[in-house]
Image 1: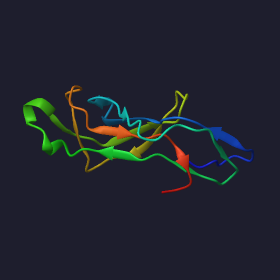
Image 2: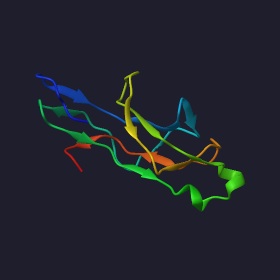
Image 3: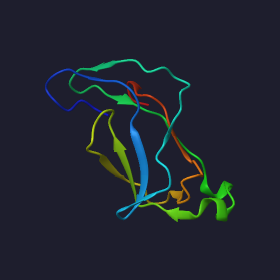
Length: 113
């Protein structure tokens, strides 16, 4: 996330992340990886913050437990926001079965990765 505004802003917590195909969410949204503690990040105009996202290969699971489904879009929600950012996810396969977790996300951290 980059502060594209003209004023300082703050960011704290986890982004919401999910895979989609068309208008349908594929499986469960990203689970929070709590190995890094959250802290408030202050971003000056032009500064960025990042969040590490781990995607487990859907092919690692039995297809009946996963129900592999090709994604076309990834939605990312900044903390405490209801509007998402949409990015291309072509080439990523999700598990339509919501009991098979493949997305894990960490808290936002200062800087670009």
